[in-house]
Image 1 (tube, rainbow over the protein chains, first blue to last red):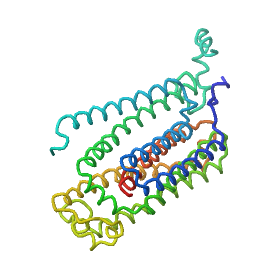
Image 2: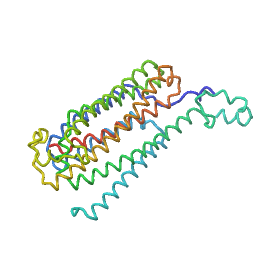
Image 3: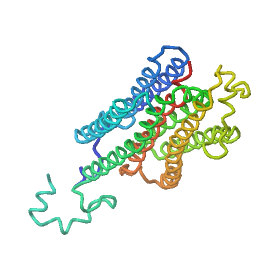
Image 4: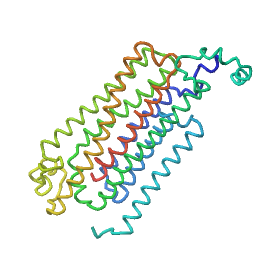
Length: 102
Length: 249
């Protein structure tokens, strides 16, 4: 019975956490810096790109998804895919219906 | 599996109290119980993604519709305050991750310290948020009957708008700044509600951790709370650039 009383799972080392923390701080600095540079239509794309990168780092390492089961990974992917589909369909509706004539 | 053979031999009924207190008897073993609650936590977080996703989508559409108003209104937010809050929240996510590590490796005082730091950083975030909100209240930028368009109709009368080099907006465009602030308060307000709930649970966990909870091998509660806290951090990672930054240049 004793082998079942311990939670056998991957323990992420503090070194990884420190590295991710440093990357998140770097990402924050870069996104603030980039916001002051006029890149036209690229500004929001870069800001969202950095935000998505930071979020992915948090999900994979702080939230241990890199080391979790395939069921968890698939569920998260399915949830995010559904979210993107809902946003995409909403936007396609707005763009194709009355964009520019509000 | 040893338990299967135990069931086959009918031994389980006499040995069912050998499992630890925290293992509910409808689970096969601790690992299965941890997997199940972890999975359920992720399902909950995905519903939260959909919830905040609706607000983000509304913001996306309105920003494209009322772009000039959204640019002027977003200039009213302070990047130093928002940036400092981002720093606090990312740090609190790091201390929370370290807290989970302390629980995994059974470091009681380390866990209490990490939870306490997370708690303080979370309170610091809300403190800064209070300063930002009170600024908005003073300038009548809270949507409603007291909402004032002065900063947008006459940017020279407003130090922040003047510093950002805002041009005066015609009345029909300036009116749309109220939509920006509605979304600003809805999004940061819902985020703050999640922070308040998280801080309350952190207080409870600090209290429990001091008497040795979570460092006895049963860390599911700390782990799942960590997922919640990191999720709240992720929401802010998107709110900060969208509300504060992207109309700045």
